Image 1 (tube, rainbow, N blue to C red):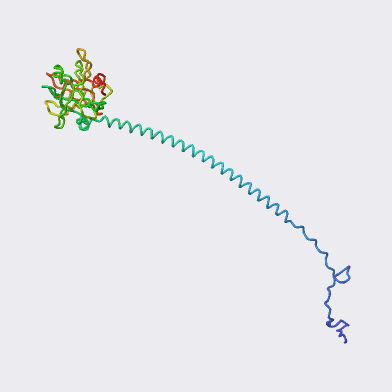
Image 2 (tube, rainbow, N blue to C red):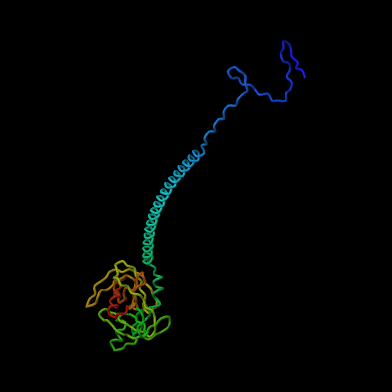
Length: 304
């Protein structure tokens, strides 16, 4: 095989030789085969530094979270203390308010009990009041206290109602109530204070008695049988407390209307308690009645 040369002896086109041409490299102006640069050493890995940094950041973050949580817990504890203190103050205030309301309710109850209701007083008293007949005289009597050990009811009346039979040595009288008659016995008398004690063979709860002295202006109800008219009710006030004469104790002066037959009947306050036993009235005047204080009878006969 011949090689073609071009003009001026220039080489002609290369023919394939079956080898891969190796690029040339200039070395001092001389073309020679190209040499590869030395390998670049690998950079050191920073994985440990990154992991350590992340761990530090995570620790700082967790520390910050713990600090925030500690502050929040402290704040919550403070809020809880404040809430408990406020709740205690509110409870104390409520307790004080309830105590005040209870006091007001009790005061209102006391005032309600003092409201004058003659109808209610009469309804409570009338079942315990009787007409009493002793010889040719008649008057009123009322059950008081509890029955005695023998089951007998004890009653109080005015002495002058039973004076006629007592003076003759008699002791038997008759009680009348709701069309029924009952025998009774004069058990004891106090002539100076014009009071007498009766007993009757039946059990009947007696009226309650007042333990405090009456006051001028205090409202009262008088129940009895004036002129034989049973279950009569009159209303008035206490006028005064008068000293008795001839060895007698004090007397209650009141202005409720009374007449013969009222003697021995109860004088009752707004609390339905007996304060006196009607005994007399002024003959030549109106609105002047007298009663023996109930405590005089309670002390003498020990029945209250």
